[in-house]
Image (tube, rainbow over all chains, first blue to last red; front, side, top):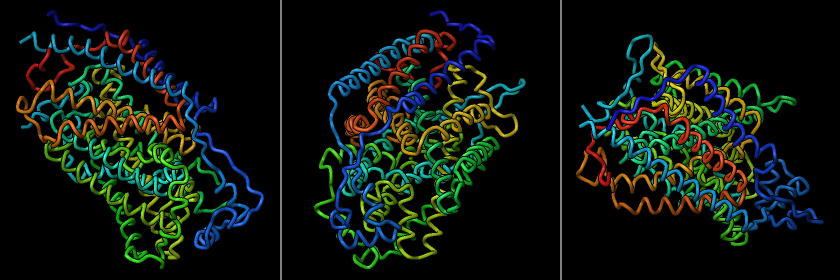
Amino acid sequence: MARYTPPQQSKAGQIFDIAVVVVAIFVALWLPLKLGLAGAAKSIDPLDAKTWDALGQNATMASIWEKLGYTPETAHDVIQNHFHYIIDWPTLIIMAIVLIAYFVFLFRASDKEYREVINEKFDDK
Amino acid sequence: MTAAVETAQTTTIHGDRVSLLRVLGPAHVWALGVGIVLVGEFTGWNFSADKGGALAALIVCWIVGLLYTSVAMIDSEVTSTVAAAGGQYAQAKHIVGPLMAFNVALFLVFAYTMLEVSDAILLGDTIVAKAGVEGLTHNSFIAATIVVLAWLNYRGVLMTLNVNFVITAIAYVSIVILFFSVSPWTQGAVLKLNELVTPGNALPYGWIGVIAAFQFGIWYYLGIEGTTQAAEEVRSPARSLPYGTMAGMITLLIAAAMTWYVCASMMPWEYLGITYYPLWDAGKLSGSPLLENLLFIATLLSALASANGCINDAARAWFSLGRDRYLPSWFSAVHPKYRTPYRSILFLLPIALAFAFIADLNQAITFSILSGVLQYTFMSINIMMFRKKWPLGSIRRGYTHPFHPLPAIVLFCLCMVTFFAIFLGFGSQLIAMTVFYFLISLWFHFYRYKFVRRGDQFSMPWPKPQGY
């Protein structure tokens, strides 16, 4: 097999490629933050009576909260802030499809490239 | 001379052939792995209590410990055989193919850069909380941490990891001191586990909460696989890498168990789940100013050690991409005097700074976890392919892990559970990041790959893989 000789990349081309990667990194990580998509569904289930007892805290727990500087009123929003785990099936299915498609493409395309590598490496010998 | 030494690669600078220096021993490997991870005991793991309660945090500590034991076993075998800078990147290049290697390097860079960001945020917030000065923000501390550590990495790997060894050891000893100072053999005096974790509040969300807790349970150990990044700078990779990695994993399992026991026995789970400084809080609640100050300093040191190791690892993965022309070869420069991948270190510096200012702590942690879990999924498949292409006896392995394929199957299954856990909180983020990796893979496969020298991607002195 003929040895593959890659083209020389110009400086402008190198700078452009670096810019592509940097922009892609920022879009992937920053955009979901900007759109408020990151973070679990957590909300406060308010109680009328704000006492340690109503908040489900025994004497030991209450004494530790107080050592940490909390009162029943200030601890209320911490203790009553709960996750509400709901399985959003359409999103779960989309996530599964995206992940599977990604890994399938990754392994298939990698294998194609790998065969070129192996052929060039071992056909020389 | 080992196979790994034979494959050490060089970069040409001003006409001279310059390579990374082989100066590290097993203690440095331990310091790199544990140094990156130990911060997870000082913050992050406790968010798993928020997700599922105190008992869920303990369950995931054990189960995720199993995941990472599988990671360490698999990694030790492959890395002791494919010992080159870039760690899992070099493994993917030799076993799966260039596109997979490109993705794995990006997983590594994202995981470590976002972990570095989390460390810097933790350090800044801890100092601000200790100072208690109105109007003081964490920004200057974050910037100083990232810039000073980048400079340290720029100056040399031996100094960097010597510093890491010392500060990691101090941080670790502080956990042991705290554990024995609160009389762990006696309940009721300082520790009150029975009164804080009751049948009524142990699993407040039931088993769905346990699964959700996997997301932050990863944080107990995330980064231990970073030991492999030093493969090309270790004097004896076949001995030092498995030894340092497994010793690191044992160290971390002990630290995680002690940390959970002390923290869950000293504060209500609702508070434990939201605090940024569970061990420092435990020091405060012990009533001992000495312990309080020791844990404050240890929190800072653990964050510093972790950020330091992360800069080291992310830069080496990025450097490897440049050296193989997967990215512009400009990144493959080795400093002529300090022998470090200095351009990669400098390039990643502003990216870390930018995210330190736009993401909050648990978002940065989640970014890091996401890339980590994608990488572990790859590792579970990678070891199966490795054993299939080069069965035992066909090449010389530095270490052969037992019970194959059980660790790979366990790892793969636990990765699937963790993906589901991430979906419960950060599903959109997971989809966005996977789409990013998909698009950047298309870019690499159909455009960038043309700049890659094909045969040069396989540098190990191995026979042709079976099936090719």
